[in-house]
Each structure stands twice: as structure tokens, then as C-alpha cells.
Image (cartoon, rainbow over all chains, first blue to last red; front, top):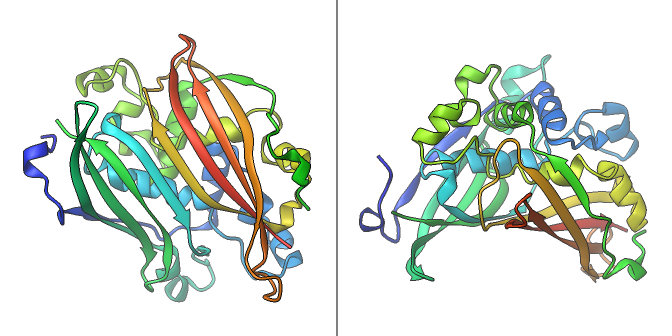
Length: 149
Length: 158
């Protein structure tokens, strides 16, 4: 059942959405899907040359995960805006050290409604969102605006 | 380093078709799944999409990013036109405004413009002084409807 305007109020929370752990293979799949072949996300020789010790996830993959989180709660067709800032790098789970690298590669998206209002004849909500890894490191924050039936 | 003269620069218009298979690939990628049966059926089954209130197979919320990367030589070309050094570039913000729906089979035109180039941070703090490039894109479908607007912010470390 779609959520309605009358059911929503400020302070309501987006059901927490967990994704991962992500491996390099997830990054490569995203690169191919989105067309973003920045070597930063798949080529260890490139990242070493610029002083990092591991490839990192595309910021847009984390935003894509946030989009999934949002669409697990509201219909995509009701989205009016999705806006994010990328806050820190996300390293993948390593095959030779899976237990110690799983938390850094698992993303949890949470959110909270900050405004319920009407504009141009639409009933809208604004919801702040934040994505963190399981260590508590913030990956992105931002908000979405959605129309409610 | 980014060429400040590029403020106001408009990239050539590019057109591309929204391929059905590409939507599935994208939905798999952002949901970290392996097979299409595990994603929301609206992204591969037209009947399911119609039942859910769409006119056709829709795209995931961040799909518009692929218009940036799959046209005009992609990231490498964009970065090179702007004079940026790929090894110093980070994507720092992204915003989508949804003005309509994008469906499988649509022919999309993207018009992208460099709206701002500025510097941010303190010169004495190494790594914290960056060039900021703001790109704005208007996405139009084959009926001439503006279906989306994108605002992307890229940072280039100095």
C-alpha cells in the first residue's frame, strides 16, 4: 500500500536500508551499468599512483543505494528531487581479509521527514537522508522530496 | 588544472536511447544483485510497471547519471575538455530534479553547461584548497518534454 499524506508526519523515519558488503565486483558492475570508468574505482595501480591503498566506490553507487532505500519506502514516480553530498570514501571488502573489511563496505541508509507541505497543488514531504558504513563513517547526506497521494 | 575560461561553456547536445537492458543492468548494480528476478519487476516487466502506475518501464532515480557517462566520450572527454586532471577529481555533490518520467525506449537529449567555476578552501591547508566546477544538465525526451534537471559538483584538488 502506498503511503499517504495523512499517514506521514515530521519525524517519521525511512525504514533503515542495508546494502553490502560490497566487493570490487560490485564496483565494476556499477561502472559498466552507469558508464563511469574512472580508474579510481577499479584499477589498483592507478590508485597507488595517486597515493591511495585501495580502489573506492563511486559516490554515485552510494547515491544509487540511497535511491534504492528511498524507493523501498515511496514509489519512484512520486520522487520530485533527490540531492546528496558525498562525504567520505568507501573501500570494498577484501577477499583475503573479509571479516575485517566487511563493516567498511556495508552501507546503511536512514532518513527522517523534516517537512510536510503543499506546493503547486501537490502534497509533499521533504526527508533528510544519510548513508553510513557499519563503522559509523558518514558516506553521504542530503534529502529527497516526494509527492504523497 | 581546470580552465576558468570554461565557465559558461556549453557541451554539444547529445542524444541517446534508453535501452531496456541498460535499465536492468543499472537496477542490478544499485541493488547489488546478480539476477533480474531479484530486482523490482517494474524495471524489466512492462506489465508490472503498468500495474504500478507507469506508462512503460521506468528508470531508477539516479539513472540520469548514465547520460553523462554514456555520451560524448564520457568522463575522460568531459574532464579533458575542462582541462581537469582526472587523478585529482572527486565528485562532491549530485542533485536530480524530476519533472517527468523517463521510460525504456525514450530518446533522451542532454544539454550540459558549466554554470560556475570557483575556488574553495584555504590556500595554506594542503589538499583542502580545491577548484569547484558546477555542471547543470537539462534532460529532454523525444516529445520535447523536460523530464529532468541535474546539478553536479566536481572538485579538483590542487
